[in-house]
Length: 153
Image (cartoon, rainbow, N blue to C red):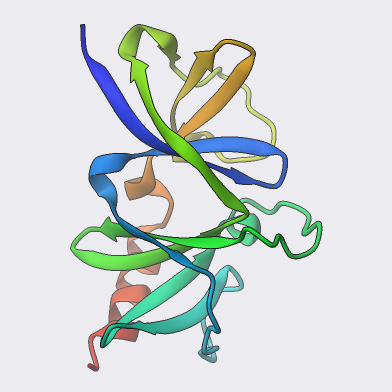
């Protein structure tokens, strides 16, 4: 039976997960340099050990209300089509091993997040964890725009 490993994290009140194979590292939230003329959900860029990384605010991307700053806010660095991208989340809770049979496809009608971002919904005890399809979180044009932010290194 196949097992999927995911990094579980919260954005607002909801719990999400992303496959651990796409996660490069998790770093403390740090000062972000804003870049003009970027989509609203792009917070800017950070310099992480000499590498410029664009930062996406998942709250803004998912059009969620900002309930204020979380003291546990972190940046999850993921590999998105060979470009390192940071995702700001309220906190990372744990690494989960989920049996594939515990993951259902997304229901036909989902309020809030666009269905295309979602790989499935994991049921673990009383928890529901939305498994994100990180490759689809941005359109091709948005991916190109982010790649251009870091290509001038």
